[in-house]
Length: 171
Image (tube, rainbow, N blue to C red; front, side, top):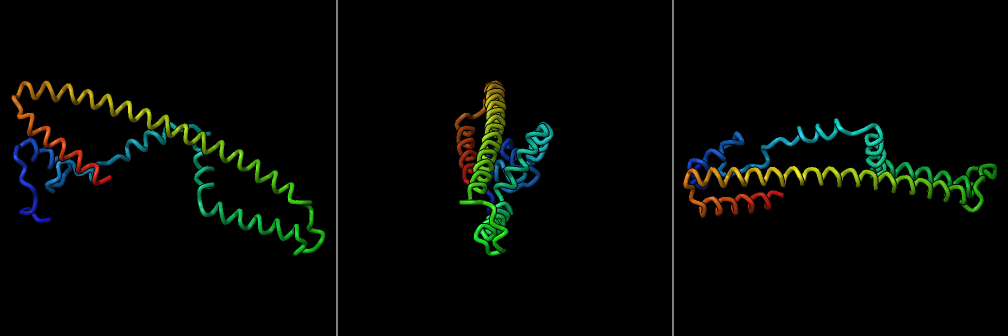
């Protein structure tokens, strides 16, 4: 998009917002330029040792390496049980030991996944509260500033609708 293709902003405030992300591109809020890594680093530092371990285990359990490891493990177990590697390798009558191990693994993995999901839900709840409080603060400030400056409210509302629509399209 060339500069002539960019929509002309109708007020200085719109141009200031466009420039605030470091790139004049005709987009009010170019969400691609904003850095959210600081927030991620903050939440990573707050995790306990148990939470870090849980994240590692559930991360591995949700990977293809986990699937391949189990494929190899089950194949070897079945080959031993069938006597492919000799009759001395048969040790699990009716696969009862394998069934018990897999059941215990499923219990622990499902519990760890639920622990991880609960922590993620708490994090999202915290973010939602912060977002709501930030919204309320911005609303109060905006109303007071607009009142003092005699701002064209229809223009601001139209701009807000445009920015909201744009943000929904980028997500």
